[in-house]
Amino acid sequence: MDPLLELNPLKPEEMLEAYKMIVGSYTPFDEQSLSLMAQLSRGIFRRFMRYIRLTVADMLLKGKGIVSVDDVKTIINDDVLMKDAELEFMEMFRNEAHKQQATKTLSFLREQKEANQKTIAEALGFAEAAVSRLVNTLEDHGYVRRHRGEHGEWLVSAD
Image 1 (cartoon, rainbow, N blue to C red):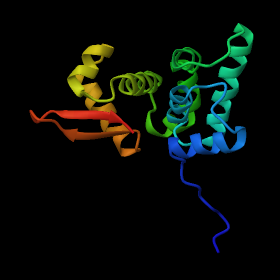
Image 2: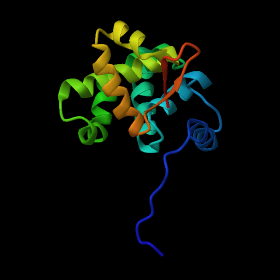
Image 3: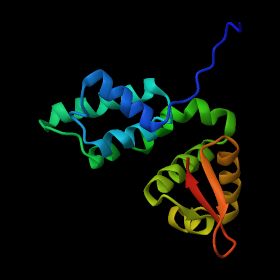
């Protein structure tokens, strides 16, 4: 037997199920906010638990009773995501600006669900050719998926 066992990333639904088994409910989250954290953690359970700790700490500090999707978006922002993805992106992008562009692109796609490359470029203020190269790299590493739209354009969605 191989001494190294590689664990595949968990699906967001599996993370929600694990959380519910441990805690007994989604409290102090609603299902949407917990699901968003599972998506943002990209299948890494340790990261998922860190995001839970960050949001609960903020909730307690503010005296709130529940963590909403807006709270998650505020706390688990692009800076947090960029820091967490730094090791992953280090292999993919040599340039710091490209790492930031990748983080912003993924955040945009989480909000939009799907967009063509031109829309991404216009919304984020990037050159369309740069978005094309960025999306190619992100697709090669499983961060996004592309398919042809009705008019032949590439539609991109976050994985």
